[in-house]
Image 1 (cartoon, protein in one colour):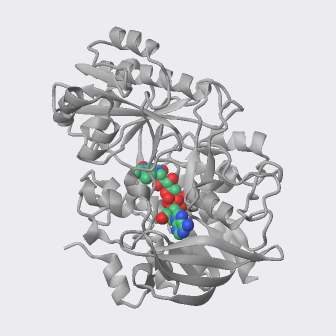
Image 2 (cartoon, rainbow, N blue to C red; image 1 turned 135 degrees about the vertical axis):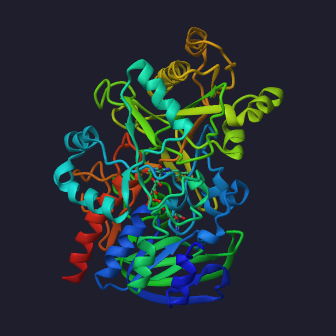
Image 3 (cartoon, rainbow, N blue to C red; image 1 turned 45 degrees about the vertical axis):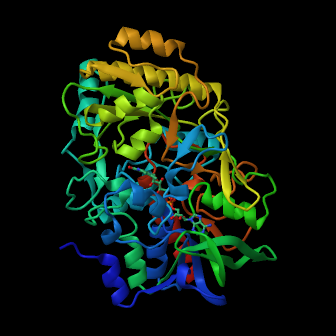
Length: 527
Ligand SMILES: Cc1cc2nc3c(=O)[nH]c(=O)nc-3n(C[C@H](O)[C@H](O)[C@H](O)COP(=O)(O)OP(=O)(O)OC[C@H]3O[C@@H](n4cnc5c(N)ncnc54)[C@H](O)[C@@H]3O)c2cc1C
């Protein structure tokens, strides 16, 4: 029997208000209001509530637990993801995956846990005026996060990952084992639908329970519509309650707080700032939002690969990430995704018979993805978060030629790798591509494919930026301690503060930065 951490906690007296059962209007007050309960919000909630502060954590998503996680895409995506996992950029060219539930994206992520790459931290020092945040100062926070969340290399590689390693071996490309944030993992492979065994050390089962046990209050299914401020200082926020279909139903809560920690994630945090019309003298809110836009390549193998089973990600290759230096041509990281039917059906290119044939071969498919490292030079300025008429956010991300050049090189590398690993056939996910049977054929085809929005399939599970951190007030919205420059009492602690993408999966970078800045904030508020 798996222990239901959430049900037990609620029974023990945790404070939880569900927006679906909220009625009318109410006013509450606290020391610190944390907006969002994902990687940044979860860590902040634990640190600040354990420091003795009166903390409220609000999330627009529902509170679910291991018992709700049924390993079914059809319920997981509408229940746990932003826009039912169908969020896209404004022109619909890039699919965006983000969590919308207590625990945020950490509840549904694939558990890869990598430190911020050294070249990224150096770039931030050289180009973004970072003075205190570097690999030495972050090292203790990485160690702390790794210990808290059971992060260690995972060696039970499934076939999908093993073929990535095999291709790298054959081509003498470097590759490494992936550390994961799991304890007693059953190796099921359904991390993206919420962990049914509580093995994944997401914020849902670690920091949020710790915060609630320390006296914090959780408000789920409440959306922070606007932040309130007066005379240059934050005073609180307006929350709208959502029903079980995630729609506003008229109830609301006004919260008075002396400090707000914005942790609504990239897209969510800039959107809250835009709706609130906060002071922003250099018009930076929402700009420089990055995605690690990812191109994908499918390969058919003779043997069963069963890419839905086992830890989704356990091998990566950084062979092409930093080849031309951090500011050179667009580098890319090679990884694999889990391959589940809805995920595959919505990403695979082609229609009708071709699509159906591919779906029927699902158990023989290996899929490789290449995550393009965006934001490291002036040819790659990322996207901009905008608001629709109803106040909901949308990301406008025009894809630059620089990114397209990287996409073509990445599609070439992936096809070469998959044939080197023994693939019978390879098909880059592109509307005009065909199944090809050899690396020379693949090379000739990919070199001719038009790199265009909506033709080349692109996806992202790594949204970063939009509230850039840095040393210069003309180019950054928050300082290195996470303080919003233009309002007292407002911090931003989440993935939106990165001034570029990372070149590595983001969660561990967010945990470390959040530990650092939440601890500094706790000291300031206690003083
Ligand atoms: C499918 C998937 C797989 C991934 N795999 C990995 C991986 O293996 N390794 C890795 O490092 N990273 C992975 N990531 C990315 C990683 O999980 C995120 O980068 C990280 O969780 C971001 O943390 P955050 O605090 O910025 O935002 P989030 O964790 O996304 O949390 C933001 C929270 O804010 C809430 N929110 C937003 N707006 C509002 C509002 N107005 N009012 C109230 N609440 C609001 C949202 O509901 C959400 O719960 C993955 C992500 C996804 C979706």
